[in-house]
Structures are given as structure tokens and as C-alpha cells.
Amino acid sequence: MLSGDAHRRYIWANLEIDTIDIGRSCFESFEKVAESIRYLKFERELQTEFWFHWDGHKVGDFHNVKEVWIVPTDGLYGCIDELDYPGHWYPCGKDNVFYVDPFNSERVFRGEQGEEEIYELREKWLSENEGFEAPHENWIMPI
Image: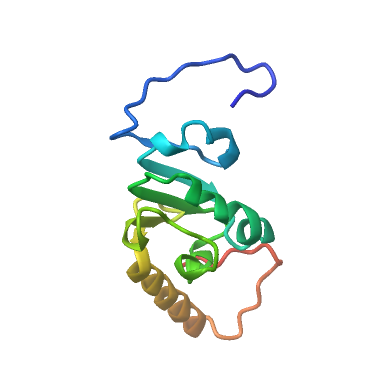
């Protein structure tokens, strides 16, 4: 991705073994190589209309992906039920989808069991902080 005064750069990647981290880049930017990517990592806000109705459907374009690593920039609680959302298809299967904590990249949750763990963490936090009011609408629950 080039922006401003950035220069064109080439990278060497072995698409059979390297994780391709596209960060917040648009999935469309990778249409020509999507079928070659086996390990995909990206950052997204999962609690947005754009994700639900548009971007979330684009993951399925990576037909041959073996693992998907998602960094939910709006917090882990946005991952709950992601794997069962209609139209969101993960070619690698649900057990090969990983959620990376946006505040601690060493904390990773895997597949449906990971979603259950995140749900339990959320419920625990809510019970321990009963009556808490978020300071603003974009506040992220620290689970």
C-alpha cells in the first residue's frame, strides 16, 4: 500500500508458510493473490455495520486459507458469535480462526471454544463491575 511520499517496495514471501498480515488494508487490494494466501492476519472493528454487511463477507475470497488471525481493534467482545454470523465464511474452518487480543498480542483465542472463553471473560468482568457505566460510546471493555 502506497501513501503520500512512500516508495514502492517489494517483499519476498513464501505464501505456503508465511502469515500475510494485511493490517487494516482492504481485502480488495489482495484479490489477485487471495487464492495463494494460506495464512492471513488482519485488523478490523468487528462491531461495525461495514464489517457485518460488507467486509466480513470478503474473508471467504481467500479460498485456500488454512488459518485466519483476527485482531479485533474494537475489543475481544466483538468476536462473540462471529463464526456463526450469516454470510461470514471462513474457508479454513472455525477451529482455524484465531482472535488476537488487541491489547496483549500474546493472548490468543481459538475458534468456537475461544469465543466461549471470551464470553466467559466478558460475563465475569460485568459481574465484577456491576453498575459500571462506560465513559463514552467508543469505550472498549478491558477483558
